[in-house]
Amino acid sequence: MRLIDGDRLFAEIKERHDMFAECEYIGDKARRDELGAFMADIVNAPTVGGWISAKDRMPDENEEVIICYEWTGLSGNKYREVTVDTIVNLEPGCFAIAWIPLPPMPKEEEK
Image (cartoon, rainbow, N blue to C red; front, side, top):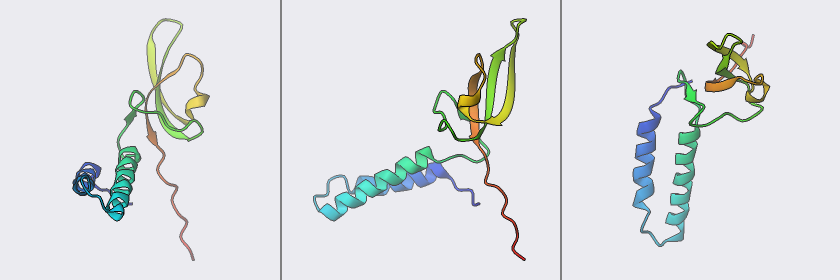
């Protein structure tokens, strides 16, 4: 895995995307559409080492992720815990605060 600066990459692609804003040539319009799709992919790409706020966006319902959730005990105290699960499997009364995608599984070395 190679870490990149997604914000810088987004800015560079947006600069190229904006160059095609006034173009009439259909090929240039197609390039602009492709660049727009790339920009959406960058915005929605999983982050490495960073939590995603549940207020910003939620993972797919069946996607296993690391979830930080909050719940209130019988005493009225609030607790935060972290688990690996899907959002739909959270117990009633548990509310997702943030989540992070699971890293890829290690590959076995071939002999």
